[in-house]
Each structure stands twice: as C-alpha cells, then as structure tokens.
Length: 326
Ligand code: MG
Ligand code: MG
Image (cartoon, rainbow, N blue to C red; front, side, top):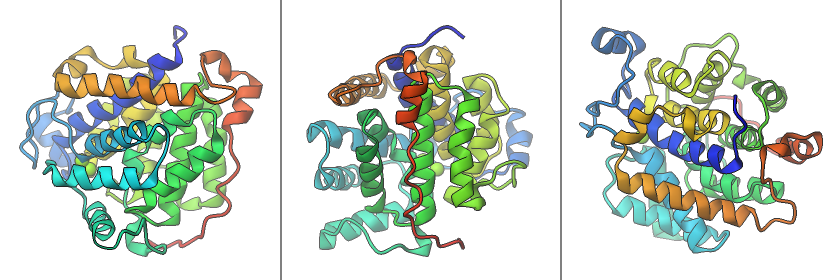
C-alpha cells in the first residue's frame, strides 16, 4: 500500500462515514437473505430503502457527525453546550431520520438543560458511536481530551458503559489507523476491549446486526479483519443487513482511516451530494487543525513508530460501570 498522509486517512475516514451511510441506508432493516433476493450483492448507491432516499443521500449517521463537527469548530475546540445545541438544531432541521434514543436525549436537554442521565439499560444503542469521529479528529494527540469529550458528547443521548466502551475502542482504532498503524496492531486495542467487556468478542461472528452497540461493533470488526479493501469491507457489512447504514458508516470510518480517501470507490464519492462532500472536506481540515495545536501532533504515518503508538494506546477503559445485560 502506498504511504498515505494523515490528511488522506482523515478525509477517507470522514467521507467513509458518508458513503457507508449512503450505501447501507438502502438496505437498512432488511435481513441478509432479503438483500440477497432483491439485489444479489448490494454494491451500488441506488438510494431508495425505507426512507425513499435519493442515490447517495446520507442519513442521521452523517448528519449528526456533521452537527458535532460544526459545534467543535464553532467552539474552537470544545464546549459541551455548543455540542448539545448543535444536536437540537440538527433535530429541528427535520432530518430524514432520527433514532428514538437520540430524540429522547435531545428533547431532555431541550426541556431541562441536562447533559445526560445516570447510566440506563435502554441507552446501549449505536447512536452515539456513529457520530464520534469529529471528536477523534480534533483530539489526535490528546488522549485525555479524546476520552472526556467522547464520553461527554455520547452521554447527551446514550449513557451506557457498553456504548462508552465501543466509542473509546472505535476511536482508538481510528487514531491508530490514522497514524499508519496496521490491522495487526489494532488487535491490541480489541484485546483490551474484550478483556473488559467480553460481550464484544467478534470471532466467531454471532450474526446479529441490530442497532445494539455490541451487535454493531461485532459486525464491523469481524468484516474489518476478513477484507482487504475499503469497498470489500463496506459491501460486506451492509449486505449483512440490520442497521446497515450505521454498520456501513462505522466500517467506512475505519476503512477510510486504513485505506485512505483513494481507497473509496470513485463512483460512490461521485454520488454524494457535493454540498455534503465539500462540507466534510472543510470540516476535516478544521478538525485536524485543532489537533495540530497539541504539543506533539500526529502529523504523518511516521507516527506509527513505537513511541507514537504508545501515545495512541490509552488505558482507561477500566473506570466504566459494568452493566452486562442489554
Ligand atoms: Mg441512519
Ligand atoms: Mg441506522
């Protein structure tokens, strides 16, 4: 694989969210056998689906990412109220869809101004995981800020230890891949995740593709290690059905960080709304600029040196409460 710059990988991750979302949304909530019967293998951005989308149209996964990125840029780093207000504004913009847990959390913030609830068993969906990339891109060399802001944005709608664990592990994988780390190195992050939360064991794949954050991450991780291109990865996960736009978005994030923007099929990029693509490009530049203010920015694939890898491996999954039932 040619050497990729951090910018190639970061833009790949963010555009990867959008193309994974747009491809998967067509088959969201279908089963794998229904997809097979209707499409053979679903690999073209045709739109449609239960939301009757235009080809290339994105959904809440990308929309919430962009809202959070806008808030981070607006606050020139981080302000939780600005992030929560951005979710309110996004919901008020009549998005094409919104998850129930996201809606409940945003409405709670609107009515009482609180930024979250005590951990709740019904908040283990994937809605906070799917939108966390902007936090990752703006905190590349600040592990503490990455952890604190990831949790803070998540808890506005999803206060659950398994959501937190999935978000931090996915963020750490993304950070590692952005720095030029290999899939083999990603195993260390996942060993740590599974040691703390064995529910996330993904080999063998349990075969579930619901919006439960554990099902979502297992599906993405299983495909990540058995494919060797962005296209193969995203096609693999969306054809498993279920919450396919969200598994597509998260696979797109990791695949984009691993394979870079040049790894994303051009036909898919062309189908995205140009306004969305250019906003993503602008936001990526702005988020990386915030990261580069850190004293030791992750600026090139050279960061995959042992020292930089050390900086990217955090240790702090341990403080989470541990509800183990869904
Ligand atoms: Mg969606
Ligand atoms: Mg979805």
